[in-house]
Amino acid sequence: MVIGVPREIKNNEYRCAATPAAVAELVRHGHVVMVEPGAGIGSGITDEAFVQAGARLAHTETVWQESALIYKVKEILPPEYRFLRRDLAIFTYLHSNAHREMTDALLASGCIGIAYEDITDAAGNFPLLRPMSEIAGRGGFLMACQHLQSMYGGGGLMLARVNGVRTPELTIIGAGNAGMGVAEMAAALGNRVTILDVSFERLDAARLRLPPNVELLLSTPSNLEICLKRSDVLFNCILWPKARRDHLVTREMLRLMKPHAMIVDIACDEAGAIETCRATSHDKPTYREEGILHYCVDNIPSAFAATATSLLSAATLPYALELADKGVIRALRENPHLRRGLTCINGVLTLEETGRKQERPWQTPEAVLETLGN
Image (cartoon, rainbow, N blue to C red):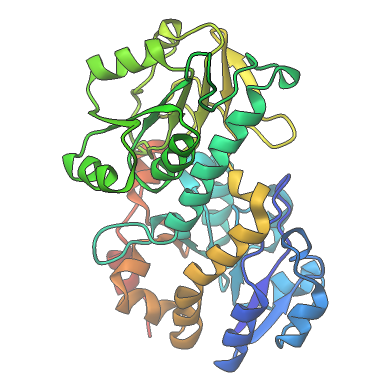
């Protein structure tokens, strides 16, 4: 199979889908890998490193037009819509529920879209979200440290325990991978940290990993209200169900927070768990709503591109190999966890969450795959 690795064109996206080691493994399996020049520069990977691994360098049009599988990091953007076609499979973070125009283009082209974020494992977890969630959590804490500084328009609060002054209080919604990433760094600097979660099991697991300066609370409306009133920074680390129209933290609830408090929405579901969240970029990462500073960059891991690329490539490579070795249709039929990531095929939407949120007709992946020949 011919596999294309294009350069990411999203603003401030420096990650690359594949490392030279991943390219070498794909080539070892007999596949042709075409890499767009400059695809790895933002992650510290030279074109020569890809060539030495067995890749062919090719310009944008060639990568897209001659590949059967496009191996990417971020969603398809308008300049890339013209390359979509019926015999092409896209393997990337699609987040189709958040990008209606992109979903229109995917369906109109008839291409196959497979979303990293929806692929599951045997335990029901999301293995291709985990590595980026961990980086996003740690990175989100570092961004809070930066944007609370006075020169960035913050309240001038240092997120660390300092003798003689009040210790900052931080609340984390969600004890998953991102939340644990925040908690480990915040607690290590001596902050008073509270984690809210609806699962006793996750809270128990967090207790075993975290120091005593982390309070673990069941997520209830009363506990959330208490935390909003006392927190200097609120970190949202939960993925809000795509079909839900309500919010965990409403606009009115922001008025409970301190005047110089900050929200870091790591999950960054627009108008999701945090009603006032709207995606921002690294160019202009913050804004204020109801007087509260919001940081809602939707690709935090890109700020740490070398680390993120290595982790992401290692996590996605087994699935890319399966798609290439077996062929896309066979791989989807045989692997139910990979099939869970199928977003669209032959003009049919196959992701229930996007169908419900965008009020579109959809079919199950199994139903559509049954209609296809071998």
